[in-house]
Amino acid sequence: MARIKAKDTRPEMIVRKIVFGLGRRYRLHSRMLPGAPDLVLARDRKVIFVHGCFWHQHAHCPVARMPKSRLEYWRPKLEGNLLRDAKNLRRLRRCGWQVLTIRECQLSDVNDTTTRIAEFLHVKTGKPRSAGKPVRPSKHVH
Image (cartoon, rainbow, N blue to C red):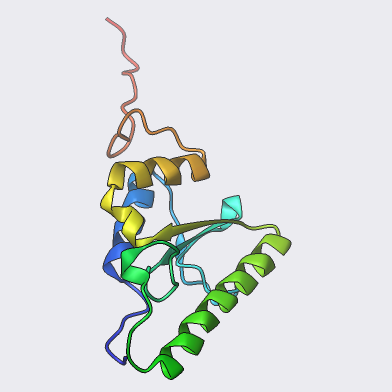
């Protein structure tokens, strides 16, 4: 259990890359907010959680099945995660934050996830953003 990462996981890195690619900047794991959301877009009062299907018991997901051994340990632990998630979600919404939860299994379709995130952030996805500074027209007209 000590080797299981809570931050900088592969699913989280994928979501961070998508959000950055959409031209949005964010803070990571703000301990000042309930649940320490994975990405915090403070200007928009929006947060994104990236949940592992097993740890957050994603309904109807094959990865989220209950272990067959040591149920007396796993059941309260995983059910406690669900209760804590619901409590944090309520607290964030009560404080005026909008919340998007991305599940690990949903990242298999990156295009769909990008569309969901873009809609949540109200970002258009039609054209890729240009890199660098915009080109200014020359002052000298010939």
